Each structure stands twice: as structure tokens, then as C-alpha cells.
Image (cartoon, rainbow, N blue to C red; front, side, top):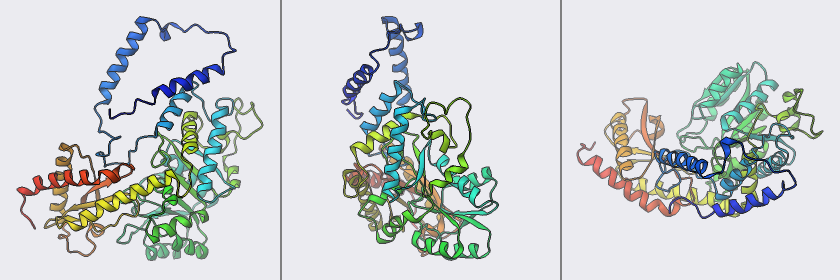
Length: 462
């Protein structure tokens, strides 16, 4: 059995307890489309069987041999709590639509803020990192109108797209040979004036690089910009004890930024979509102020819709996150932190094997749990072609990797791996974000070697 089915009985027990809470209400006969008679049950079974068949047309995202994109299975407690909440289908926009789930969202978000050392804060869940970054940069634009936003060239593409939506100028800053924001290039832009917001990426989606936050904070003292941390992918690694010094120091300084985005649906063991945005200064809530003629009358307490650009939002996402953090507290040296440490250990293990094999070029030591490499060849174009072939051949062996086009100087900084006949090189990329990956590195390596051997057999070596 590859998919967990043993926990389904727990859902039935929890549903019984939930149902008991409404036992005082009169019985309601189901409408025709929801009949529970034999013919209706047969129709449901047929449709669900068809759905299951359709869903088999997927990569095995839950399995350790899927080591490609940022796809991590939800924890069983998140799956079950989310499903349980769906029998009520709460809406966390206003308290009358999601009373219990709104309280659980506030508690869960406060735990995220506390993980970053914040007690006073303003924050809420979002549909994902894009919406969370949009809100953070929208607030930054309100505070720094008509100024330029800056992010690194390896930052997520969403920042440039968001700048267009917000009508704010955007400037990308060059990266160093480790894929981090280059400080000299950043300071040149700051000296030219007009910069209102700098985005520090705490774990780029391509390579997992962590921008040098301590140095960026020193520049903020001099130039007075607003500092936003996009920690959508890497934020939880603030709990990990096995980071290299530079990354560890960067995460330790996160309490000093103005806003943070973190995605529980990445390393937080949540179903998609569950992002979050946090602000250090609760006073930014004034920018959200609005009135609703029909949704904010059930309680004098703060409605989450009053501090969010999104309106309707799934209360089930908040319930799932609350339950997960209840089971796995966000604390250093705890079970959840150990899971993160295993992910990085897996990435370091694969990286070292790649470094020791002369057929591969792997110059970037993982700062988190993402490994990128390519196949040594005479040129960048030839290397990329071989990487794509290895990608296909590995998939035939049920090893699913990812591909990424990266600047050639990033993948071959010394200029000794291959000739730079084009500006980018197609690389193989592996996101080892499942704790089980640590135990599966030998199998991943064996399948990668088998795929590489097949590809290189008929290829001239350069």
C-alpha cells in the first residue's frame, strides 16, 4: 500500500463527534441529488472510480522517487482535518461564515509569527505565495508610493509581475556566483535613489539560495528602504540546526524585516493552497480598512476579511494548519525541525555524490534542500542537451527530476566545465523536500547513474 488509507477510520470517528455537536437540530431529508439510496450510492461509486482512474495520470508526487518540483504530500493530520472541515465548509472572510476556523487561523498565524520572533504582528493565510507577496508589496507601495521595488535576478518571477499589477517600477539585481543577491550591484541601485522596497529571497525556487540578509539590513540603515522577506519556500528552515553559517545567520536576522511571506503548503505539510503573509507592524492594517454592508455585523471582533485583500477564503485550510501545528509544534530541536534537517542532509548527500563523479558539474552547495547539476560536456548547449536526455531516461526508471535553465556563469563559475556558447544551461534539479528522501538517496543515485550511463554510451565525451 503506497497511499495512506489506514487513517480513514479516524475521520469517521471525528465526523461522529462533529455531528453530535448539531444533534439538537431537526432532521433534514436529503434532496434528490444527495439521496443515500442504493442507486445514488452506485452513481457516486461510478463517478469516484472514474475520478480515481483519471488521477492515476499523475507523477507519484507522494513517493521519494519523485524528487523534482516543490510538491510535498500533506501530513495525514492536515488531510484529515481539512476533510473534516469540509462537512461545514467554513469561509474565513467573516466570523459568521467561519467562527471556529477564524479563531484557529489567528492562532496558527500567531505561531508562524512567533517562529520568526514576533509577538505583535498582523497576518493571515492566503491562497499561496503569489497572493501573499502581492499583499506585502501592496502595503510597501502604500508606504513608499511611486518608488522602485528591487529583487534579485534569481527571485521568483512573481515579484516583477506583481510590480506591473501595482503600477510600481521594478529592478532586478544581479546575483553572485552562489545565486544570492549581489551586494555591490544592490548598493549601486540604492545610490541612484528612488528605491522604496527591497525583497530578500530566503530560499530561491531554482537553487534554494539565501540572500545575505545581514548585509542587506546594514544597507537599510543607510538608505532607509522597506525590507520584505520572501521566505515562501525557505521560511521554515529558520528552525533547522544544520544550515551552513551564512544561511543560519541570515535566518536569525528575519525578526528585523518589515514583512515575511511563508507558504505552509510547501514545507509546512499542508494541502495546496495555503500561503501566509506577516507584517511586523500591526498598524499597516489601516491600509485594508473598508466596510461591508452585510458581512461584518455578527461580531465586534476583528474579521479576517478586514485585514486581507482576498475575501472568501477556505476555513478548511486554517483548520488543517492549526491541527498540524498542534501535532508538530514549530520549535527548534522538535520533530518538525528534525524533518527539515533530514531534507537538507539528503540534499548534501546527493550533492557530494555529484561532486565526486567527474561526469557531472555541480558547483552550488545546497543552502537548503535543492540540488542543481548538469552533465559535463564540451559546451553549455551540449551539456543542456545531455541533461534533458538524462531527465527522460531517469523518468523511465521511475525517478522523476526537474529541469531548470540557469545562467551559465552560475553553473560553471570557473569556466572549466564547458565552453560558454550560450548564456544559459539546462540543468537537472532535485527538490529533496520529503524527510524520507534521506533514506532514499542511494536508490535515487543508482537510478540517476543508470540513466546517465545509457545517455552517455553513444555520446562523444568532451
